[in-house]
Length: 90
Image (spheres, rainbow, N blue to C red):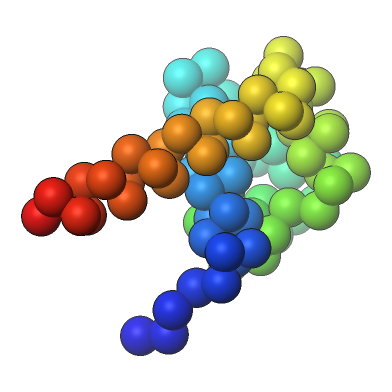
């Protein structure tokens, strides 16, 4: 397994947070795809971290979810730090 760069890890954390917020708001990947003007397959790749959200997409997603990009980033950073702490303890 190859180690992720900090940038890749951050992008995956952002995808994880977007996916979590979709679940909290009971919104679907299909709805996300429509908002972004992309296919459901492409939206799925964004949500699983296979392809990173670009800046414009993040602004559109944040607005649609009633959040700011900063809030998504803060939550993603917090979740990544929590996961790293759990991994150190294990």
